[in-house]
Length: 110
Image 1: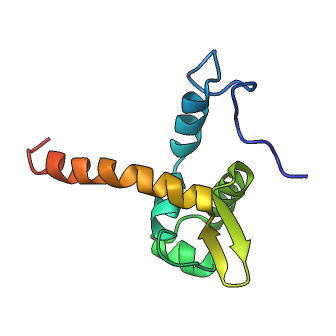
Image 2: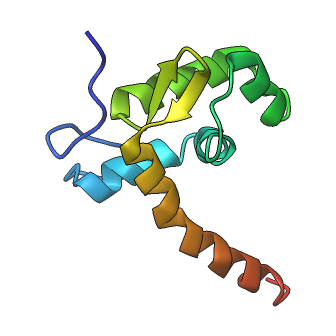
């Protein structure tokens, strides 16, 4: 049985309420999580290919993050490797405008 992703009923780091936005930000704040979503944005990748794309991240950490993302419903394992689910693609699309903003912001010398 898959582990449950943090929800409003479960506490999360930095929140007494466990509101869905706090649970999501907690999950996305884990090291390598956003990078994994980024690398899976266009194509399914095997564990090895994903590790290479993630600058040789530790295989243990990578597998932990993939498990968390699978449990949350953002990533699935197919015959071609790991890929974003429909929900994962929606999450990625949500972050594209934030990425555009970050690009503009970085040109202002932070």
